[in-house]
Structures are given as C-alpha cells and as structure tokens.
Amino acid sequence: MDYDIVVPSTADGALQVTMVSWIQKPGDSVESGQDVAEASTEKITLYITAPVTGVVKSIAVAEGEKADVGDVVGTMSDGGEG
Image 1 (cartoon, helix red, strand yellow):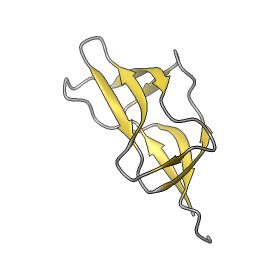
Image 2: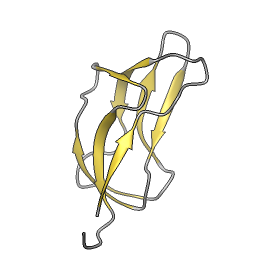
Image 3: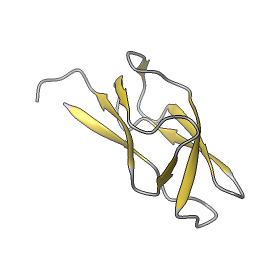
Image 4: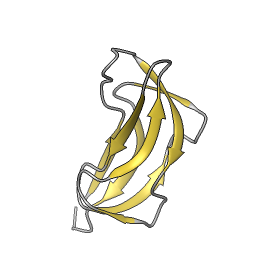
C-alpha cells in the first residue's frame, strides 16, 4: 500500500517550508518515524519523517522548492498489497 509523505505543521506556525534536502532517496528502506527529509522556514529547520516502515517510492518536491504545510512531498510503500 502507498502512503503520502506530508509536510507537518511547524513549531513556529509557518504555513510554508523550503525543502532543504532529502535524507532518503527513492528505493531506500526506512523505519516508521525515521527522518526522510529536512525542510526549513525563515526561523526553524524541521525534519519530515516516514509515516510507515517501508520504501521511499517517489519525491514530489525537489530540494530548494517550496511546499505548504499539509502538502504531499513524496510517497512510500509499505511493501504490502493494496
């Protein structure tokens, strides 16, 4: 089954982030809660974590691009059917 990697709400209340780097790339195996990307606002740096244990499938927002809180920035697969 596929799962969305989503920009979480930020501690500083910002509504938009800039993707700084993808720590994990498509094809990488990750554990639920593991950092997959780093993003920043004007005030803070935050980490976007894996929603499930599985494999990063795709990146939808490249490094240097902006995304809003709640936006899907990538997808993962848990390796199961569905």
